[in-house]
Image 1: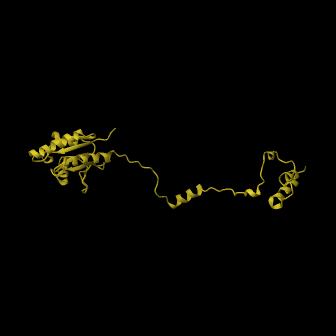
Image 2: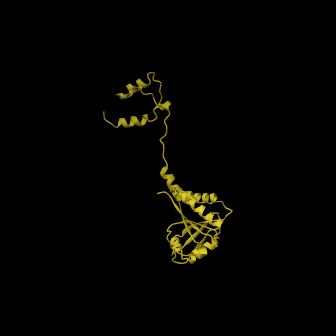
Image 3: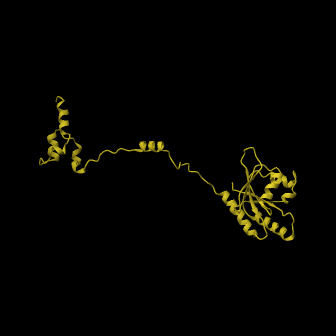
Length: 221
């Protein structure tokens, strides 16, 4: 499901012609944007308990953006008065966050505060809302790879990962084998004649020859 975010626009306390036009143009552009849902309510100060505007704010179960002409403190005060529990106010301009109410240990609902002013263009406000939507649409994955291991884990890992390699025999000490060598010689003399026809070999070429001869003497042939 595509990410969406509700945008609640609080009307100015004193609506002049230019401010009313600004609010109407802002709502029109928000409605045209994918992923943004616009809702217009009265100024927070004039909203009473159990009114339509109060129930509208209370009915927003998830996080939402709130565009207001007033300060963060003003918004916090009146939402707290309306009994909206456990709110985390996050100004999108980078101002410090603040909290209001208590939800018995449950996570606070986030309200992203967007400041409205006639010297801030509507296009700039729309861009701010689209950037907010994009930041909430970007998935974040945890690779689950520990960044550090304690000393015991490291030593255990290294000991289990150790691989012992057999000593490499020099190719010079191994007689070359041909297809005819697939048949094992019947006697040592036959082996000697095949691999060393000129008798050019020494005991060093067969370092285990004495042990081998002792083992053969144990058998009665």
